[in-house]
Amino acid sequence: MADRYLNLTATAPGRFLTRRLGLPRPVPLRRWSPEHPRLDGELLLLTTGGSRHTDALVELLTAQGLPPATTSGRPAAVVLDATGAARVADLTEVHTALHPVVRSVADNGRVVVLGSPPDPDDHHQAAAQQALEGFVRSLGKELGRGRTANLVRVPGPTGSASSTLRFLLSPKSAYVTGQLIETGPDAAVRDPDDWERPLAGRTALVTGAARGIGEAVADVLVRDGARVVLLDVPSAQQDLVRVADRLGGTALPLDITADDAGDRIVAALPTDGGLDVLVHNAGITRDRTLANMERERWNAVLDVNLGAVLSTTDTLLRTGVLRPGGRIVATSSIAGIAGNAGQTNYAASKAGIIGLTRSLAPRALAEHGVTMNAVAPGFIETRMTASVPLLIREAGRRMNSLSQGGLPIDVAETAAWLATGGMNAQVIRTCGQSLLGA
Ligand code: NAD
Image (cartoon, rainbow, N blue to C red; front, side, top):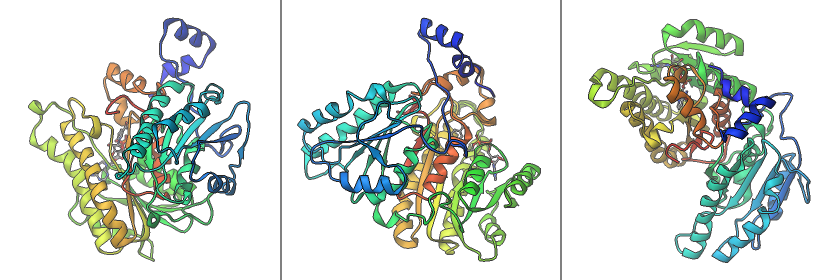
């Protein structure tokens, strides 16, 4: 469903009108494409006193093809190393560093603040580091013009942040803003040999891949080098086969809630039998207020969105099909964080995904060498949201810092980053910093 308002505000008369009337002014987001793989412009690296990682950071960014400039007229990205901020007085330096440059950050630019985990034994350091979160979340709301702000907490050496910095300092992260991302632990870090094709030689399974977000995830994983097995319900077989043929993958028509789903997945895998990436994307809604909701609607949503995720994950881990170095990406929703009227079943299932992710991730890493993270999309333009009533749909689109809905590709880029990234147990919102559950 086209966002006509966004198209209007991209025209000169539209810009004039929205400015005069004080309406939201979304800027078309510049997303990754083969023709536009990088941000347009220089990267400015700023530090505060006691920054822990500056030299290592310069080295890391340079190695990744993102060499920082010392001065820049209109930076495409600003990275502030505030890892050493340990006292309230240190926060003055955050202002000193960013105040003069924030206005000049280019449209669709990035502000990334690096912090350290708050120290439970040092309440002054913890206060200063937590302050950075409030700062970044506010900056995300102020920036406008398609610009984003995120906070990356780096527990140890900067190496754990490499995949995250790559993602945030690229057009792939266009719809991720106002977020806190904790990198590491070290055991979760596994940098690819080739950053252009980080999933080369890897096998990925995507559920719900016949259309919408799942199809976009499959596209991006293949772009990143993976071979894909694509699963969707038998009634969607025609679309599923079309997607699989287009991507050179395998179609697996299967209801994920089937008792033998785990075994059928194993049987469908390529001959080496292993799996490196598992993206749980299949999901349904059956909306009604609780007072009007029959048990079937409740159970259907809980079964597909949560029960099947638990049982297939358990099977694929227990059997060792998910190999060491593997990545599980589950799909939550901001409805699972904020709640939503008419979606008690859906919100319960999506909150359950967060509980599952946070609980299982440390054990999956320790026992199987597999990480688990979740993506929590906000309002994404798909068939699911096209069926939302007009006024609620418009509110969903505008009530975020970027004043527009996301696209399936935005969730797919986040999932692909989590499928390579050096983090564990994270829930990453891809929601343009939606006001819901913020
Ligand atoms: P969609 O309805 O367009 O696609 C979902 C796919 O899952 C469909 O192809 C469907 O056939 C498949 N599916 C449903 N039940 C299945 C089952 N039992 N077994 C196998 N496949 C099954 O939805 P979408 O908008 O692309 O959403 C994808 C995921 O993202 C879902 O988990 C959804 O809850 C989540 N999400 C979407 C939004 C949004 O704004 N669209 C927001 C937050 C979260």
